[in-house]
Length: 354
Image (cartoon, rainbow, N blue to C red; front, side, top):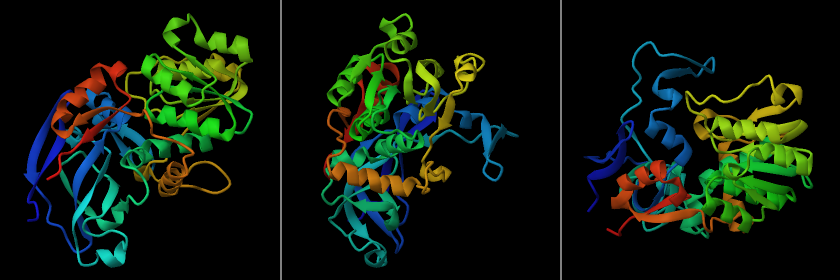
């Protein structure tokens, strides 16, 4: 029997997470009903919302002018669902689905960008057949898309020396992409488990910023400065370190999402005097931003490229989806991500079969 309710993980207010039982939207002829098997979070962005530091909580973005502006009234930011991707099984398909998505049918394993919930109603065009991908590969397509976008935006070339700061899922996949390109990779993170993964993925040097009085100075002394830095931590301290470690006329790519009140950079120092090129990379579907290059590539293009790269074993999710927790433990998982990052790379939630 087709489900009539869904259980969605909601962020009610800063640091307030709970499951919400709600009616399942009525599926239409272009929709599919997907029963979840695995789910993941979008750690950096969602932790800003969880901590109350997201700019969207107090500001509005004018999509025509592409400007953040003061909000005329309190923002309707909370409550909001948490989660970014799901792998599941199609339980029902509308009558138009065979024409819209011929490879999506009842019983088919699929993946999609969706919040954490036990069941979803999704447009058929929004889901992709799992085919030969593993669930772990599919769930890492989102961070791989941002990693690939950062590498392309930064114009990373073979033989260059690249510093990757912030070794969450995106940063660890940046390490893999840069290594596959033939770059020499230096990586930095305060978390031991992530440094170990970066080393396994081929980073030539792995550093703990906290164990050095001035890591950027050490890197400059040893290398003369990196050709490019890809900053994935989302902290201004990490961005400042990346700028200081980069050679004269080098590039720094910001992949991390920086929250309000995080301000530790003096642009009159290394950025200005070393003529650093500072680039933002945000190949998110909702923002319609192309990556830089001779051919504009958008989120859908990069998602397809990341899926291909996983399928060809150019990159791997091995070690990234850790820890593994049950769907019923999702509330505790959010607190773990926020409060004990040393125990987390990217949480994988497993759903019991109905």
